[in-house]
Amino acid sequence: ASTRLIALIGHPVEHSLSPRMHNVIYRHMDINGVYMAFDVLPENVGQAVHGFRALQIRGFNVTVPHKQAVMPYLDATDRTASVIGAVNTVVNDSGVLTGYNTDSSGFMRSLEYRGIDVRGRDVLLLGAGGAARAVATALAMHGAGRVTIANRTPDKAAALADDINNYVGGSVCSGAPLSDIGSISCPYMLVNATSAGMWPHVESCPLPADYDLSGVAVAYDLIYNPERTLLLKKAEEHGCMPVNGLDMLIWQAIEAIGIWFDIEVKYELALKGIKNIENFS
Ligand code: NDP
View (cartoon, rainbow, N blue to C red):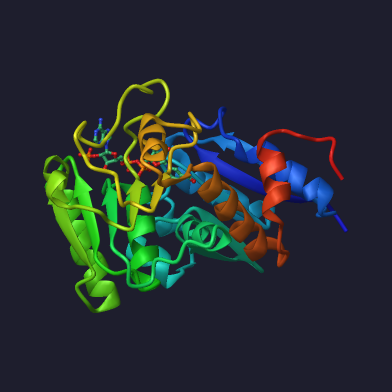
């Protein structure tokens, strides 16, 4: 059989960890495929998708800033991805392109893998951008208790909470200004889906200095560069279980590979791939 191409489109993409993670996985799982990143300018997203159709490639990942822009060029979008309003994985089934959001399913898989059960438990979610949309949707769909979405721009948090509540037909989510979170005490899990703390702004932390982390069981930071953000360091000092963004990155890839190749990849293999550890069996 001929080698199948899986692409990644984004702008910029040269620092993406995905090519090496996928290619290591493909080699070790005997998948006859190659994963290549393409830096696609925003005005060329449609042309890139048309090109992938013409080449009949098996699928592609989509990263920042194209996760919304790609949607009009697809034939179908999975319902969860429609609610999130963003697609990060596209599969080509005999010329029909369908978009999924494996950030959302990957986030949930990462919780399951670590034995973190959010059912009926309160979550404080920081941020209301694309990543927060994926996380909030996953939490609401999987029966979390109250999900408070706190954002620097409060209107975005309120709008996201409304979208999710309409989707699940309840009132799981509420929006709040990030500056008010001192009054939201002791959630079971705290999730940082803001970019505050990401390299090179490693001294930045989205939490107010006096925020009381005691009693928070899990602190999940979607950032993976650095692997230990200031928020995670503080959380660890208060006895929270720390989880960094590598987990979500790994699980969204495992979910995508499942969609393209109907294969279940082990977490440990993907982790070694992402850390560029080749000499393992
Ligand atoms: P967006 O640009 O869509 O959203 C950014 C969010 O961060 C907004 O809510 C914004 O608030 C907030 N924000 C930015 N700077 C600050 C600050 N200094 N203080 C407080 N809030 C701030 O980005 P994404 O949602 O795509 O990504 C967010 C983070 O999640 C990034 O660090 C990204 O790397 C990470 N991520 C990780 C993934 C993984 O697999 N681990 C997957 C996807 C994303 P406002 O609305 O007020 O501007």
